Image 1: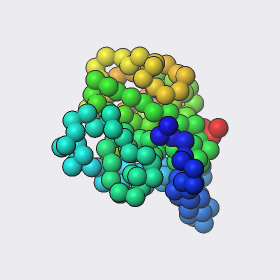
Image 2: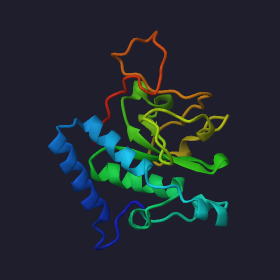
Image 3: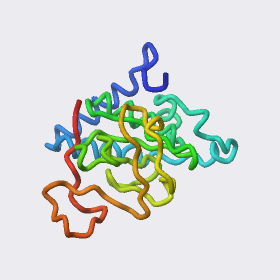
Length: 189
């Protein structure tokens, strides 16, 4: 319901076209377009007022066009916008839901070997800037997540007890993984 545009709603398609045009002008790769798109969403202000009035903030999400119009949102609002926008741009995307943390994040299709527990999706935080694949410690629960909590048919994400970035196959496997480490290629559908 939230990911399908309403009749006459061109907000997501229009924004995707503008982001693609900027990327084309700058000669960016598909991976750079995905990173730029996620940075755009991550820098939409967090809606602290919505959080204060509704502790179950994920149960009443905005439509993607509302998040754009209001220029604010909580994790579910920004995640729905991210998934809709990534899909409009041709990327595989899923909603990663963490109900015990009352949190959601986006997943972007990436090589299975580099993904969360072989799910085919790399974690993308939507509430603040984190590179694709970097997981803030507080975002994932201590126990594994059932696969039903991911909006696409894939296995559960594994818990990570520290920031972790996904290394590409070309990266040195003995090197420490930092948020600035090489990232896996991002898959388009």
